[in-house]
Length: 536
Image 1 (cartoon, helix red, strand yellow):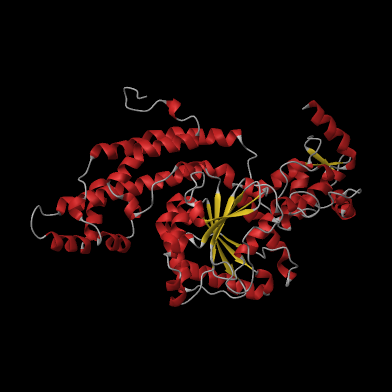
Image 2 (image 1 turned 90 degrees about the vertical axis):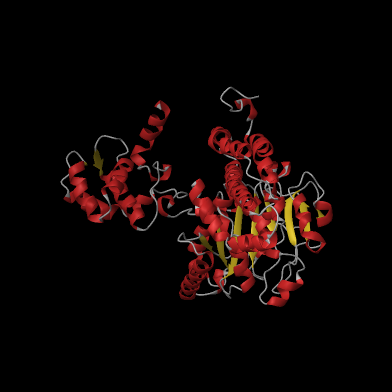
């Protein structure tokens, strides 16, 4: 199983999931177990955590449209679904694929070894009574699972009455999901204290976080600009990072827009969000690998902290006093470990949370530093992860078309309601006449002022006219390549009209096509293009 250099044979990694599972069990878990990682940070990972489909976690205050958003994606009601202006969803609902419609209650769900929820039993009956799995046959759920969460309320009373640590449950899910979507209502933007606390609890998972400003069709463009600015300002204060979180603006349900002024914006934003969600299955293995690396780095830090506290404890007298002193000076211990082992400050756990957890621990029972356990994790990070990265790329290449299908994802894929259909370079796609012909008389007037020879203008002559658009040379160069259909280095009147049409497309804010679409090929050149494709 091992070579002379101490590295494991490549046969260990037949696929990414199997490789991650074995690495965790043989190298990372022993370190976690020895230094009480599961008591301080996160329960041990199970087989289902490595095999489960990508999951999307929806978080938001009540009536921001979380459940409606799920229904919009799937285009189908799910068991246990309730929608209303009041706080209707009072449970965590895992919406997953199943052969038949049905609901599995929380207590039964956490004993199912095929589901990735077994460790949630640590949150007790108060939580499990508010947790269920809605199973149903749906094309979207064949690729992803979606977690609906209770609407977040404002005020201390609601927080106390939950009976379980809401932020801790969300943090547990955040570690295991592939995407976290925070929903806000554009019509009544307000971030409660509990929601702020929840967002802070998700702070280590900004890479998974996306923000949806929902119900944006209920306000005017001017109001929307103000709401968007207020949201970004509020999020900046809470998340406290220089990076800007990606915000998608729209109205995510299948109802007419109340204020349709921003329809194109909403369509573009929805398309971007859908593409982001559709990419999850293809990137799932990379996400699991990334999460394991983050977990390993934290486990290493945990080992250094626990062993340092053990080392400082007296052998006989004054243990309680010393424990209090060490907890109070935990920041100094952090700093010492950081310098001694060259560890980034970002790898350390939250100091206040760590101090709170340490209060209930017996420091005398902490283990001393065991270098072999740390070496195994170092070897995993330095060598085994590199092998798995190669496998990740191979699996991605083998499954290039793996993405979420069905539901709302199919609605705008093809046909006249596809995003950007009939706009920009796609204008005139389903018309019998050549769309460039509409403005050709205008372009012809310019063409004949350039003194064409044998019905064609040279590149130098065309350039003088094209640069008047003020587009960069890189863009104009691409337009020239697209317009010079016969590749003779000159433009005839049709090709010149086509070049001007593409300039207009770009100036109107649309992207240029990578290849000239069939409907834009000049009528006299259509046979020529077909012949070239046959030769190719």
